[in-house]
Length: 214
Image (tube, rainbow, N blue to C red; front, side):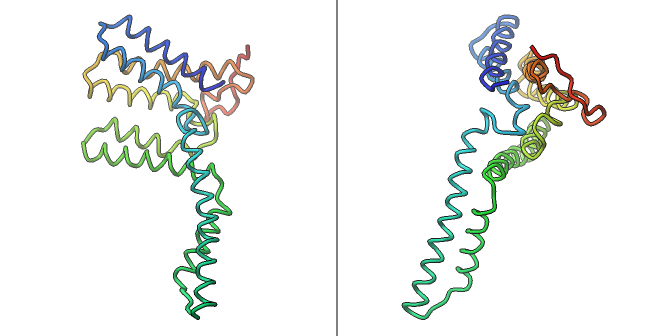
């Protein structure tokens, strides 16, 4: 299912929470933001609306590695033929940069960027002694390397996300955040269950997809 559809469902959940719980502009914004983000988070195991911008950045980094290595190699060759000076360290850097740009897929670079953000959140949570933020950072750092619609699309991931939402609710002292976060994530799994590919809700205990395609 498209990311825009997941996001729309999440926003609707957030608006419903804003209408159900005592209303303030701040709480309404929180409900919508948390539900919308939660509805997209299960797809951090692939390219989605949350990581699409990083996909563009990964393409630029890959091209930078390729052309940077080539230009550096040309500069080294010029100095060697013009001044009989050979920079071994720079030559090694040029070869490594070119090879990384040549063999590294854009998806790998994107995943690494997402993981770097997750590692930053994990460190921030450790410094501030916020367990929920550490869990969130670990989730973000880990899931990009998983198979799409694998572990992130299971009841275990849903339970982990609910725990993160509970910690966020206690931190913000805002009633309903855990429910909204869980409902947003759950909506993603239910929506994907309605597609032909379905969802492996109990993976790895039960590896077949459960689906009710519309």
